[in-house]
Length: 229
Image (cartoon, rainbow, N blue to C red):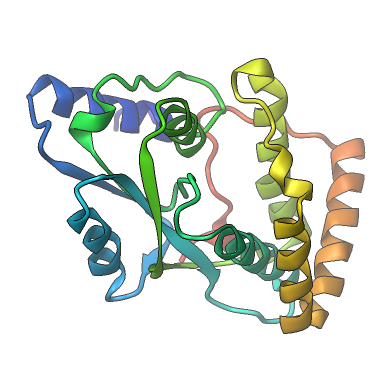
């Protein structure tokens, strides 16, 4: 069995091979292996490309369960979804679990190795080049929430480590403290107050775990078993 290279290396090879083959009129779709999508999701995603000015489109992740043991992560996923919806369909964002782009428009895009996942790198490229992106909120991705504090910790702090390693290449977005974020938080708490309590507890435990038993992540990071569909 070939050595596992990690998602970025796989996406990079796929992207560069298609560019080299001259498939520049194609629309490339990426779907994470450990999620499911609703039956109409691909149609909703690709319909956005009926507008010739749209260069990329992305879906919307929602938790596929809200039961005891995974309420905190379910709340976190719902919070991110509400935040995306508050920002609106025209905000430049790429959600790595399901997205698509016109290959020709991103022919000059080159993924860089490291923990900065490809959706963040693509988003930065799109912002820099002022390319039009649509969020297809009807393209729903069903995500299995982490079912343990340890798995919640790994999910949460991998992103923190990636941001810390990125330095000035991928600066933190300031919009996380805007009115959009506050409205998304209020909306999510109203929809799931029990989940809000579970989320607060999970974040507290995750912070403790990070202090006493920090994890160093690599490009070959494997999703936790409890988050696989």
